[in-house]
Image 1 (tube, rainbow, N blue to C red):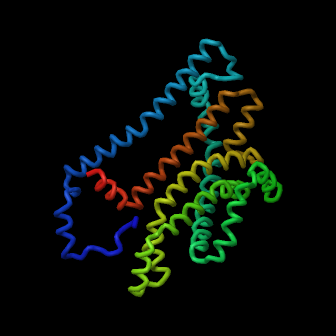
Image 2 (image 1 turned 45 degrees about the vertical axis):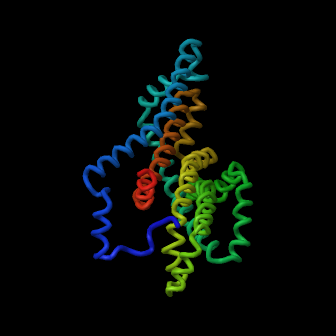
Image 3 (image 1 turned 135 degrees about the horizontal axis):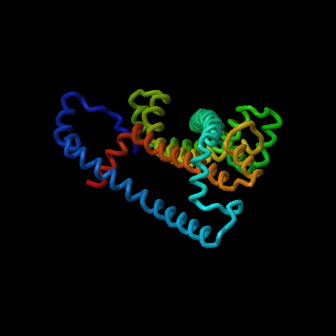
Length: 293
């Protein structure tokens, strides 16, 4: 069973356990941090090198072929022009971040409510899950303009687009995580007198956490893109509107700069899910250390 232990150490047994585990010493903690840093570098280095090579090839081609910047600007031009127009980019980024946060917050709450309902009710699971799957066949490109027509150019239709883009991966992974819980542990708690809600909280929720974070990482990458697309459909400000304006002005370099900002935001949010997982699931780090000891 994944997740924390169902019983806690008593005051008599806790010192013994601490004495047997050397992970609490300063040397062990420093070694653990060193291994974590080396692992993070080993994971990040290959994609960074690939991106660096692609940018170098791009820069070399645009310089050697004298490509018109309105057709394909060089990476250096994108960087310089983006920096010179950083204030406009920042002012356009803030509305997009607001839409992303609000829409993803709505998706987060709805996903938990629906996943819990699916887990507690077989009727709801048989009735709603096929509809959730079918909802993924509806193209957001067709729905977004309708939402703008129905709800205007404010924040709410952008929130709905982000929610539609991120809701299903969260819900599906949570439901799968709840279903993966150890049945023997559930039966043990119920035999000890624990109610269904308490057994759900102590067994099924911890078991679902790895699934939840897997779904969170998929969904969070869609969130910023969903917000930008919603702005394309209709908005007063945001990175989507900024890209449209610069495209109309043939400022391809600033379009690329806005795309780069979108990518950086998505990568930052993706990385933040790992930090959040380390904070909320400390037992996974302990299990990882045991597996590599």
